[in-house]
Length: 338
Image 1 (tube, one colour):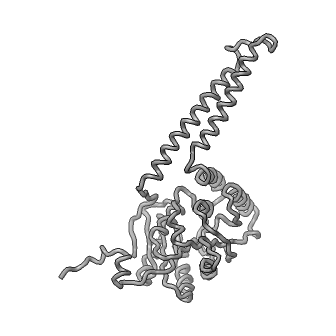
Image 2 (cartoon, one colour; image 1 turned 90 degrees about the vertical axis):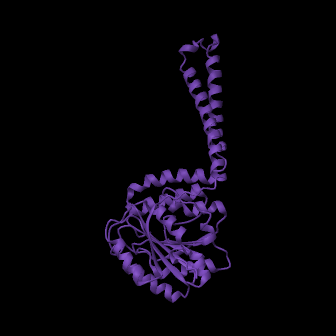
């Protein structure tokens, strides 16, 4: 009689053979040094999910914690089969942690939330239920009313939200909220890199995603210190440039670089004509070799040619990206408790 090594049986095979019921709902929680929060979060979340009545799983992604977070998560996993843990080899950041959680999630609906208990697990049913309406939403985002926050924190957040709306064309009041519910098929289209987690609604708009915001409760973190500060503002600005490029020119980069190149070439041509015209006696009879406009003309012409050349190279890289089938992960997993 042939025996099968259970370790080699995939999740799909397990479901087919009756090992377990596939979850309908997956909750992904990235954590980093949250040793005092994970147990309480798991307890409150479990109470909510059990009462919600859907088959579920909770996936904690340990993003290279240096405290006892992983030990606490391991205890939670041993005491509750619904809790799974993905452990990174080092700290990669929130975007790779979310990407890993999305990759390991098996539910048709995936909910992401922070591990610091600033979001209330009790709001989860209201967020998920909005996906089940006849309006056909693909993403439901929890909206935090932060009007009572100190100006030092709320003003940069409001400015960032307004700028992201202007760049992406997506109307949303709280792009920074991690508390979101996604349809599985929409997540299959999203590829997260860098620190683009706060731009997920903008990236999803490329695929025609329908989105809505739902008010949720928000409170100061339960324990520990925040991993974010005002220093991230300039990084958000740089990420917005990347998102604008991805939304408008990722499939046609020559239009961007070519337009800049033609603009520089046009200015260079006009500057060259002016340089030649200034040699005429009635315009001063200036010597071309001593005219600084000659240097400006050469600079603009060279810059224009470089922009166009870069556009052609970007077109080739774009074709390679879209036609190549390789999928590269942006994180490294040390251990999985599943």
